[in-house]
Length: 283
Ligand code: ADE
Image 1 (cartoon, rainbow, N blue to C red):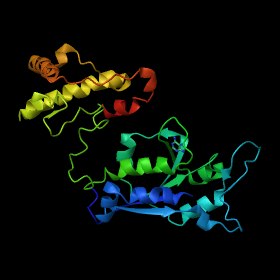
Image 2 (cartoon, rainbow, N blue to C red; image 1 turned 180 degrees about the horizontal axis):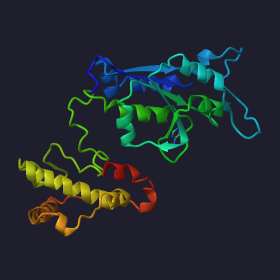
Image 3 (cartoon, helix red, strand yellow; image 1 turned 90 degrees about the vertical axis):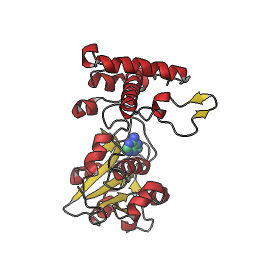
Image 4 (cartoon, rainbow, N blue to C red; image 1 turned 180 degrees about the vertical axis):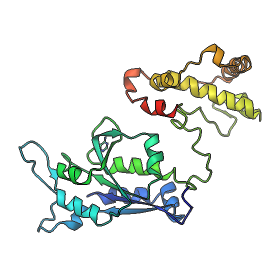
């Protein structure tokens, strides 16, 4: 485990839009993580490595076609200005592997990450050929540039660095950590606009609470992400559940109905086309 404050994860982001990210890195948990020495952020603008009068970072594509392609040399120089033998280079691109929670855990264990963010029609392919980076996408849609995509990955990675969340167990029950979507959470007041916090959560009975949460997480996962549910073998066969648990579950469902709990909406499967491969690996 990384020693707090002695061995920070260094993250450099190569982007022609550093100002898009400066504010983001300077807020909330990312700022706290940097202040406590768990992480160090750097923003590198390839424009600083241009030599022509216009400080160009892109040009028209060979072979024709719309848009502009980022020049290889400013990006290569930007990466080389910070790279060491311990650097892992990541290129943000819609054609990369879809980023998931398991990738975040893996990347949080690295010493130095350098993110390359493209824009317009992409980056001259020789950057990819020369650096052999890990290519990551944040989803099946195209952003105007990769800076926001890098911020998404940086955010998900930074919060997993030991010490950053304040409690080592803080991520355990979150969506995707155990292959399930997260159970619903409540805070005060106990009744809000006629909706009550489920009785079981007020009971102080930790075992009953854990069972209610497990049941709710399974229900939600079955409803919204059949791909994840299938990978976990949900719904469980009756013989996999103890009689006691089943009875309590029924009781809890009743309790939630007594509380007029508004059930979450199921999403049509065609709107959730993400892979369950991650969950299969978690099993
Ligand atoms: N750049 C543009 N769109 C992207 C995406 N979906 N993921 C990663 N980088 C991108």
